[in-house]
Length: 183
Length: 350
Image 1 (tube, helix red, strand yellow):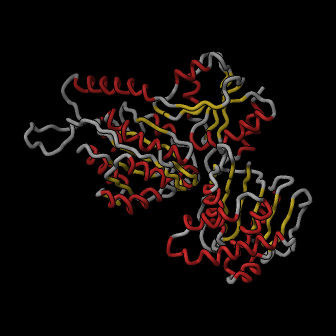
Image 2 (cartoon, one colour; image 1 turned 90 degrees about the vertical axis):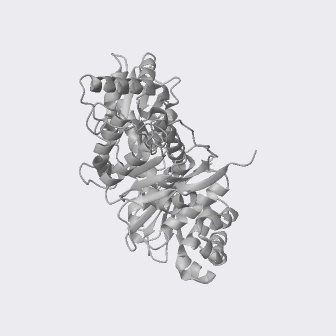
Image 3 (cartoon, chains in turn yellow, green; image 1 turned 90 degrees about the horizontal axis):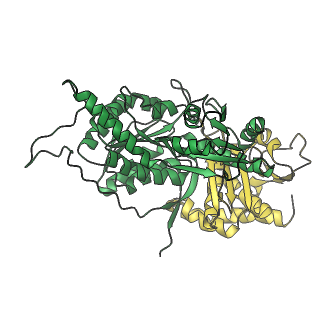
C-alpha cells in the first residue's frame, strides 16, 4: 500500500490540521507515515500546504514531486499543484471557492467537492476541511473513517474534544457526497 | 513485553525529548527559526524533572552557560541554527580545549549571512572542521529521520561524557519540521565518573579546567592528547548502506538529502540501474576506512549534497585512487524532489 497527497489552500482553511489528522489516522492504523508542512513565512491569509506520505513500507522522501493526490482548497493552489498530479491520480477541488478548473485534466480523476455547503449541512460551514477529508478518504480509501475518529483524540487538545462529534459529522457528509455519486 | 510507546512528533520536538531521555538537566538557548520547537518543548517540560531552562540574552551567552554547566559535570544542551551556531564557535573551541562535554544542536538554515530559513547542508565544513579556532574536532552526528533525531540526541550525551568533548547534532529545517511517529525509549541515562568536574572542592584539593598552556611544551603535549582522543573516536563511526550489494554506482549523501535520494535510488532500480546509497551518520569521525574498502569493489561514487560541494571532499579523500567521484550540489534555497535527483543519477550513471 502506498499513498501520498499534497494538501493546499490559504492559511486559516485548516489545511495543516487536515494533513495532521490524516497522519495521525495512518499512525493509528499502524502504517509508516510522514508529514511535511511547507516551511516559509506563512500566516493567516497567506498560502499553506503540506505533504503526507502513507505506506506499508519504510518511506524514503517526505517531499513529493508528482503526487498521487492533490487537495486544493483555493484557486492559487489549483494553479500551482493541479498540473503536478500523476496520470491516473486524484485532484480534489474545493468547488465552493473554485468555479472551474482551466487546463487539461483528462488524465486524472478530478473531483469537485462543495466543501462549505457540505460542512454547513453538518452544522458549521467552517468545517469545510473536514468535509473535504471525508470525501478524500471515501474516494481513495487511503485510511478508514474509524481511524480518523480515533485520531481526533490524539491530534486535538483536550479542550477541543467537545468539537469531535460535529467534526465527525462533517467528515461523514463529505463521505456521503462521494458514496451518493453527486460529484 | 509491553507495547512500545509511539508518538507523532516533529523533528525538533524529537530532539528535545531525546535530550530529556538522556537526562539533560540544563538547556540554554536564544530563539531562531527553524529550531524553535526545541526550546519551546524544553521550556515547558524541563521544570517537570527539576531541570533548568534559560532563554539567554544571546547565543554567545548560551554557549558559555553550556560550558559552565558542563564544567560542573551536568548534562546540558544548547541549540540554534546556522547564524547562531557561528556565534557559538568561540565557546565550542574553548569547550574542546578545556575538554568540557556538552551537546550542541544545529538545525541549519541557508546562508551565508542571514540567508533564509530553508533547509541547507552548507554548514558541513563548519561542523566537521572545527568551526572555531584551533586544531580541534567535535563529534558530528547527522540524523535523517525523526526517530534518528531522537536516538542520536540520546547518544550524543553519552559520547560527550565518554570523550569529554562537545558533540554536535547537524540537521536542517526539513528534519526539524517534518513529523513522523517515533518509538520512545525507556532510556537509562549513561553514568560516567567525572573526577575532573568542578563541584566546590569540599574535602578535596582545588582543581580547574582550562585551555591556556603557557609553559614550554605543555601546549604541544595537550594537543597530542586531544589528537589521540580524536583517533579513539573512530570507534564511534556509524553509517548506513542501502542496496549496495550489486551496485555499479554508490550515491553518498547524508541527512535530509540521503532521505530524499533513497526514493530516487528506488526509481533508478526500477529502471534496472544498479545504484545504492552510502550514508555517513557520523560526519566526524567520517567513515573513511569503510568507504575506502567499498571503493575496492565499486569504482563509481556520486556525492549529492544540499550545498555546492563540501562532503564530496571527504569522499574524494576516502576512496582509492582510480575511483570516479561525481558530484551534484544544490545551492540552498529549495528542496530537491526525488524526481529531480533521479534525473541527476541518470546523467552520471553509465
